[in-house]
Amino acid sequence: MFKSFVDCVRDIYRCDAFIPLHEPRFTGREKEYVMETINSTFVSSVGSFVEKFERLVADYTGCRYAVATVNGTAALHMSLLLADVGQNDEVITQSLTFAATCAAIRYCGANPVFVDVDRTSLGLSPESLLEFLHENTEKDRRGLCRNRQSGKIIRACVPMHTFGHPARLTEIAEICSEYNLVLIEDAAESLGSMYKNRHTGRFGKMSVFSFNGNKIITTGGGGMIVTDDESLAVRAKHLTTTAKKKHPWLYEHDEVGFNYRMPNLNAALGCAQMEQLKNFVIRKRELASEYTTWAGQQRVELVTEPVDAYSNYWLNALLLKDRNERDSFLEFTNGNGVMTRPVWKPLHTLPMYKRDFSRNLQNTNWLAERLVNIPSSVVLNDE
Image: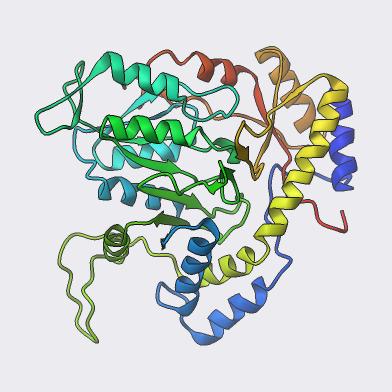
């Protein structure tokens, strides 16, 4: 099966050299737009491409407002701050996620609470969320959700759309509403993904996307906050621009802000990438279909889009029999020039999060033993 997989990948990409896990595709007007930015000299956070990129992302996702940031982690940090997450608060999230999800929580002085994920979506499980809240929390006199064990206020819930597959958002949103939690979607990997015919990012009070070099579209480094709340969008833009008050020449700041705005140079790249996003999603779904055919022939399980979802298949993933088969697969494929990697080490097992509250992470641990990401770059016409 291992050799068959390597042959399959090489046939898809028509390549005998090293095949990376995910590399960007610059087949549009990227050079033109970047050069336009350089020639204008507006290469920092002031420039026309920043606002254009924000509008393109807002229109594509169906959100009313978008605020561009230097990266997805900054976008999540700012969203948590706007949700009033602060010192000694708690935020519910999943352990099976990239480290930035919990890093942003800690930046606020808060602590993560880990609940389990679904095996199908790989995202936060509504059942696990509800079970934790029912057994461990109560509302205080202000109507805020309090963890009875720690005594701390739980301010928000951050599900992550793992590898572009949407979590069960309507159920999660209903639970968050019942328990007075702010829902913030970590949609970093899911640009182009839909749940019940609505784009990811439209279910939370705020949501964030990432445009890192390995995402479905890239700005080199960048992120975006999306929301339908005008006041939150205005405040996000103010705080991410060092809280500088508008004035023709004075430098005046009315509070402690953050230097989190996306440079115009990066936004120019993003505008060119957005023009190709629709085609990228189509190509990625075609790639997933080819992997599905191979997996069926080999009787191997491929992670596919959940019920009610339309996934961008940012990273395709296989589920192998156990850790031994996973490790043997990783060794063989990488040794033969086809990059594969295991899923992130669950955050509750890392030293800085071992003391944080976690509950019944059976699916998380099961997936960590078996899941392997496989090459998922957009296949070009000449490949």
